[in-house]
Length: 344
Image (cartoon, rainbow, N blue to C red; front, side, top):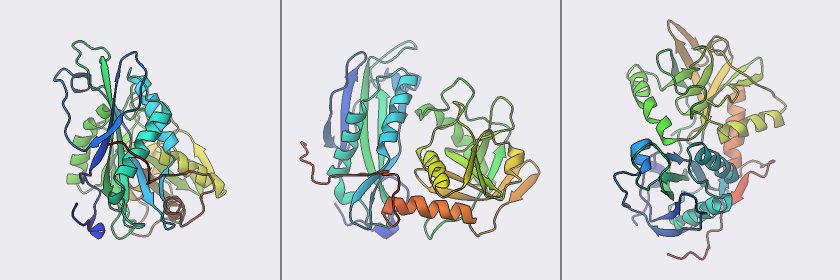
């Protein structure tokens, strides 16, 4: 490959060398797949994923730490969420052992694409797709499990920066009883148009309210929401319409470890607009500090540039754990063996 300019990496796709693929028929047990060259694969036009959206994905990162280890952050939690999502969409769940082994193999096979410490990470994308042909709304007869990776730069070039958000009263991300709590591929396309419109008007993303009462904050685009009032941290409770983010769960545990009170309940837009700090979180950015939120004619400015102290502390801690700059008190880091005996 050509030499990678690590300093110019952005959060975008760079095609790497190898990926993992496994197949399973409906009703059968999964067996380990294999590493193959990264590239296109054939799919039937009648595939369940193309016609009925039977597909889920995960987002993970492998970091090269200051100790020159390569680690993945809490991959077992991704494996569990992947299983839960598969079950909700009527797909055969991938066993945790096969999921973790696949992720390790792909990271190891593409080790030359892992950025140096502090220059980014190797983003990992597991996919589970209903690739068997089906006509009529029913589970596909065959499923394909794929893992590929791409090197990505830091989400924030030059450090954290505050973002401007707008609450939408027109669109909802999910409804009770639906698939909002699943990392399903079909959950993301409907948010692209509201997000595009928000960006046209100078906002980074939209905040979605609940579909039942139209007053409680659910998610920021594809990220979980937090706000801080009087040094108490609030985040929306998981009601089945909100994705159970692994970064979200990690922030809750870290905040409690630091002695903060964390209240997990429905968070109204009115309450959030009265908070002292706010941020959103996810695998890509880790933590995005919120500078302002606009709702109708009202705009609450949390910061014009300075990051709130609680937000900064949590960001420093979780990103420091990723790089081993700070202690990992929870044992969250999973080291990858870069010398696996892979069969290509």
